[in-house]
Amino acid sequence: MTNQTSPDYDAVIIGAGFSGIYLLHKLRDAGFNVLLVDAATDPGGIWHWNCYPGARVDSQIPLYEFSIPEVWRTWTWSERFPGWEELRAYFRHVCDTLNLWPLMRMGSRVESADFDAGRGLWNLQLEGGQSVSTRFLLPALGFASKPYIPDIPGIEDFEGEWCHTARWSQEGIDLDGRKVALIGTGASGVQVAQEAAKRAEALILFQRTPILALPMRQERLTREDQEREKHSYPALFEQRRQTSGGFESQSLEVSALEVDEIERNAHFEDLWQRGGLRFWYHNFADLLTNRAANRHAYDFWRDKVRARIADPDLAEKLAPSEPPHPFGTKRPSLEQGYYEIFAQDNVALVDLKANPITRVGPHAITTADGEVECDLIVFATGFDAGRGGLIDMNITGRGGLLLSQAWDNGLRAYLGMAVSGFPNMLFAYGPLSPSGFSNGPTSAEMQGDWICDFMVWLRNNGYDLFDADPQAEADWTEMVAQVGAMTLFPEADSWYMGANIPGKKRQLINFPSVSTYAAICGDVARDAYRGFAAS
Ligand code: N01
Image: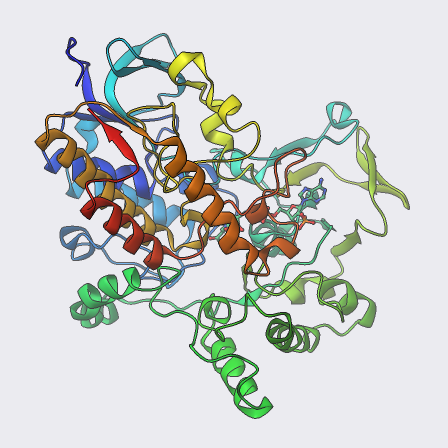
């Protein structure tokens, strides 16, 4: 135990998305003196930053909301997959209902966080010169807080407008009558493309790898429907904690190779018709571990999509005969008429593998084949997932070690929450935890409960300092790699593998099951938080 003057706060949480808001609610109710800071002006996390046209969640309601009864009983959604405006309004409702606003300092960017070993606490410098000290530091940044923009020669010469989807102007960007060049066809690119196709004079989509998108099957939701369904919410919220993806169901127990073609296709068809991400998370047991099983799913997906594209060349680019990667090893997105936009006169597809970008000029993108005129360039090029936002915060642990240095040779973290040498710091939704593989609220609540219990345990035992044991951290990091090696994920150049960022170590950055993860974390807690040294 350290015996020093008290810090300003017991805990400072960084980030007002699902994880941060849940932690704030839990820790305040557990009697901690806690502050939440966020650079954004409004709560919502990614739903603040990703305000591009068409941005909407791909996990369905009511799975994508807090299980806190006073919140869900008093909230009504208008759609099964709500858009960013409604999600922002939901976050305001959460903060109102739980009376969290007095504990939140919005519009407050953390510029650095330094561990003071003598006093056993963290000092934070905030933008604008303010500083705060805290016993525990709890970054809850989400996995996608640091946009990635590829280095394309000439972008500084571009005389039009350009932006990344996750830094879309809060005032909006008008797409009407624009010539839009959209780079990237992940979940963000698909959503922007669907909107831009309706409004832009021209939409030119630059595709490096085709997305294997699934039908969303959006639904309008009425208040009456929801009131009728609400009696089942508590069981559903409990159920989502028992599944590997944090949804209402998980993969079947049967292999795709154990059933005959008729049965296999019947299951694929059922998932397809029900829509959402079910074709990914409720598929056969070996979808993500067996190449032959995976190939059946890919072929089904390909044939469904090709049936919607009249032009055979286009069909080959958007849904190739041979899989660009095993199905589901890159995150599938949900689409609403995505494959139909390419039949419109104002929409064109550039295949970057055949025709790469060489530079950007004042009014055009130049490719190997010639110039593509545009006045707006949208980078839907993803994120430095897991680590980017944490590294940018200049977090310095014991001995002046920066977190970026600690992760020089790859990500390491005990339970995906603690880094040895960075005492009294736990991150929620961080690397090597389920985060990117889990429905957000499920993971946020599971980790939030665990972190709160840990802090109560420390308090009850009179401890005010903890650090992760280096061996426990190394074992966890190795275990995640071994789990990854049993899957097909390493076969894709995805953000799941850190492969989308030049120079980033290739490793599976998330643990693939939130239910197994919860069981392990529960076991660690029952074993007096083994793997942590507390004093
Ligand atoms: O980013 P991504 P995202 N030149 O990394 C391409 C969640 N999310 O923002 O595949 C040209 O998936 C890259 O090409 P390739 C969701 O978990 C959820 O779309 O690497 N292209 C790819 O096409 C998602 O998985 C929602 O060959 C380049 C794209 O850019 C995660 O966030 C909505 C390039 C990046 O795709 C990230 O999604 C949005 C280059 N140099 C996001 N570099 C919903 O809930 C990259 N690309 C609905």
